[in-house]
Each structure stands twice: as C-alpha cells, then as structure tokens.
Amino acid sequence: RGALHTRGTCAMGKFNYYFGAKAKQDGRSSRYPNVNFCANPQAVCNSNNPRSKEMRWMLALFNWVDRVQHYSGGDSGEDGGWNYIQRSVHFLEDFKKSNFIDMDSKHFIDEIGSVLDQ
Image 1: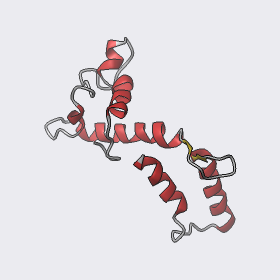
Image 2: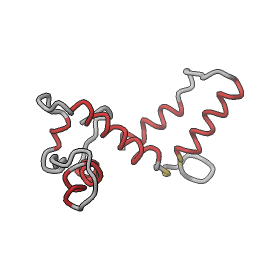
Image 3: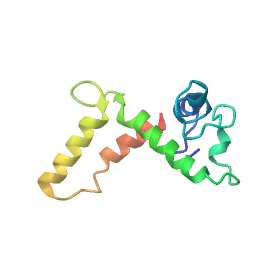
Image 4: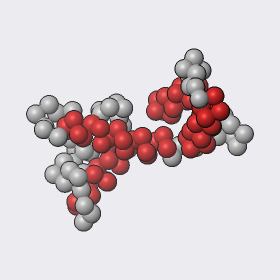
C-alpha cells in the first residue's frame, strides 16, 4: 500500500498510531482521525477516498523515516552494520569530491532497496 508498497500489520499499526484513529483515541492530534488503518488498511488505496493519494504519500514518507532513516543493521560497514545516515554522508562526500554521481555504481541505491525489502 502506498508509494513504497507498505505491507504488514506492524507498519500499518504504527501509521495508525501516529496518523489514524489510534492517535485520536489516545487524545493526540491525528491527520486521519476517522480512519483505523489496522481494521481497514485498504483505506489508503480506496479510489473513492478523496484523500487516498495523500495517504499513500504520507504512508511512504512515514515508512521512509521509520524504516530507512533509522535503520542500522546488516553486516556491511566498519561498525558491523549498515547505517543510513553514515552511508548518506559518504555518498554525498563522494559527489562533492567528483561533482558527479556514478549511476553505474548503484551500491547506495541497492542498499536502500534492501532495507525496504525486509
């Protein structure tokens, strides 16, 4: 579901906790207070819902922050784990040195894809 094809009860539950009916139920502000994404995850893809496109992008951005930007794991890197922030800095430093992004060397992009596939 959404731009990143979000799946799983945990991902939808987290989205519901921060942006859906659960946030409202707990007394917090909610972007979608009348939508329970746990009970109705298809609300994100419902073409009859005028906010479904917005929901898809909100869900994708939330998952990007939750899954990719906070990810630190795997077996790559000197510290024994892949870290998005460290790899982003390295990627941008390489670009700064050469003023060129070598699209033939897709390691960074492939690594991010691997995090999203988990």
